[in-house]
Image (tube, rainbow, N blue to C red):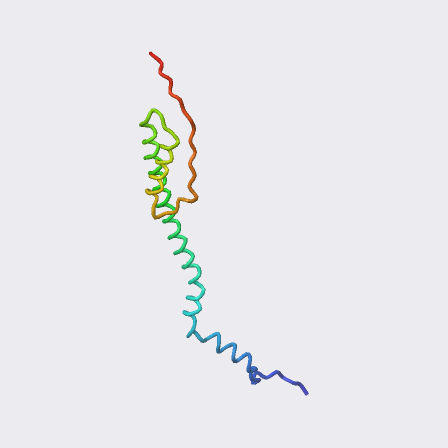
Length: 115
């Protein structure tokens, strides 16, 4: 007496459910969207922050150039002149915050020599 394996055995309920789930495509777009939203949001916010930083960098560069031009036009600058120039810089930087800005200046003397 020999026993042969028959293929008439029905798959279990779990196997049938997994096969049906694998064929079902109804929620695939929602899952893909949910996976991509954090990446796209990060790219958007990063682009906005980068453009804001670039704008501030350009404005600071222009203000530094204008300030250096103002200082270079005078023979002697006093502390009150320097404070007035810094007030102008604060006005030019609006609406951006000026708290992180620092200024450094050195005393320079010009000697007049005949050539």
